[in-house]
Amino acid sequence: MFKRVPEDLALVILFTLSCIPFVLIPPLNETPIRMLLGLPLVLFLPGYSLIAVLFPRRDDLSVIERIALSFGLSIAVVPLLGLALNYTPLGIRLSPVLITLSIFTVSLAIGAYLRRRTIPEEDRFTVKLGSTLTKMKNSFKTTDTKTDRILTLILIASIVLALSMTVYVIIMPKEGEKFTEFYILGINGTADDYPTNLKLGAEGRVIIGVVNHEYTNSTYRLVARLNEEVIGEERVELGHNERWEEPFTFTATKRGKDQRLELLLYKNGEEDVYRSLHLWIDVT
Image (cartoon, rainbow, N blue to C red; front, side):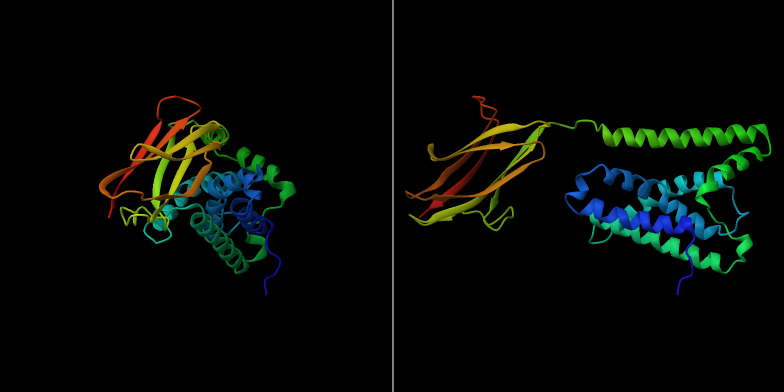
């Protein structure tokens, strides 16, 4: 059985596990708590767990050195984990990255706990939350030279600046290219098995999709034409990043080759066609 887990390692494990539901489960993943938990999991906790395993003794590193190395190692480790995932069937997606990062961090925290147990209690590194600032202040005061103190201040300032820039980029993301996805899929939901060969009177089925990447609400009008004759019309309102996808059925009413099924998309009441798609159909 585990004895009492040190406060710092207990917080690492609790923080990491708490992050999972706030990233994966709606509507929790739509709250600001997601960012508050996610940033430390990416930028600090993996490195801290690794440092805790490598340096379990009180005198191995100062508090400031542990904090600085925790940020640095996290920034180095997280991309490596992502690179490793890229060569697996899971790929670099949110869920696999989160689970891998969580397992990595919690496993190292448990390893750090087991290593500290092998060291006499008076030599173990421990964090008393009430005295953390005092330890950091004393660590700074005992720095050997004025140059070392200046370098320490520069390091701390760099970490604060990096964190501030990261938070700013997340809160105020730069708008990307504005566009709308417009596509046709086969009835099985893939980009194949289109109804290009039909018998007279048979029905053809496709799936039509529209995705709004315009960074604003948009109203679309979808017009379907077969051989220049309008056979369907739909009005769609979408917010940014919203998707509309519906099946569409048409009937082959006359024989002939190379009959043209056209799908025309108009945006926000404009007269000109914004996007267009077509499908060539042979009817026998």
